[in-house]
Length: 433
Image 1 (cartoon, rainbow, N blue to C red):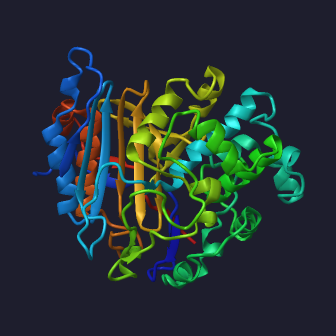
Image 2: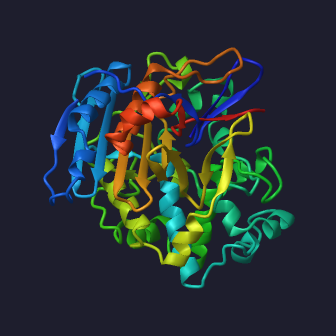
């Protein structure tokens, strides 16, 4: 969720939580791993987790240049936790699988669940105008034409607030990131920045990722519940899912054992700088949650299994709009705070997130049985090409191999020969201006 202007052809690069990074199916050669006791898996299912292959592929992510990474994989009752690399490049303190991590835009799934709970109670209508619930927040015409659904599936056309909150990034400078480590910024100010940004389209016209949508969703949640949005989500989503290490931090410090968070800003910060201590009010209901990888797997398992939403609302959440690349090819389908990604071994649902120095991706099979949550502590490590586009890095290829090994298991080898490389959603979005 960062932004910087490339010196090439005036392009602006914004890391907002979604992207397309080319990866291959190949699993790179040999992470500390931790076997997790659990109920016996059904016959034939334990073979779905190749612990040694997972260990080798996670090692390869670190060997490719990632400082530290941790992974939680689940196939029914079979679980695997692994970690590779360091949490602190100076002291060489190692990462471990149960570290608490800033999960960025995965927060959007939590916020969307809370809104959909209100839909189920009849307090919110997805296709009602935002002005019904928040009169005066948006200019008159926008308030009447933008619906709640458009906020949640990013088709509102409202611009993103990140450039307004961190203006130095437009010059590829981290100055405003450094200056605002302990700044408290109100949601209404973030909305104001978003409304000042260029519109990305007419309401409902096309998909365009904007953190502003989810800050507005948080304000709407507060209005209809009479409770602070973060408090409501904590009580009715986080606790309802049984998550023990997930929260909206009350201070700039990540609660619990955690890694440092290294931001490279595509080489404009060299060496990469630690941003693990940071006031996350700038992200709020769009990206401030912290969690462990195990908690993320539990959250999506509860969600997809019907434990947090009624069937009608879960179906609405999984009603998607296409997300296309610059060539017009569909690279994923975005629902309400969740997206689907098709792999040769099936369809997976989840989200990813990126904040200064920390990236995360969490994906689950349609029934919530097969899962991967992966966290890493170095962001925007790629180089830019002459047009200002991030180029795939060895880390991306290694991460993609682990991604496929974790979700497809033994079928990953078959997939390698059956299909060409795929697009893996990770942590950056390109915005052209």
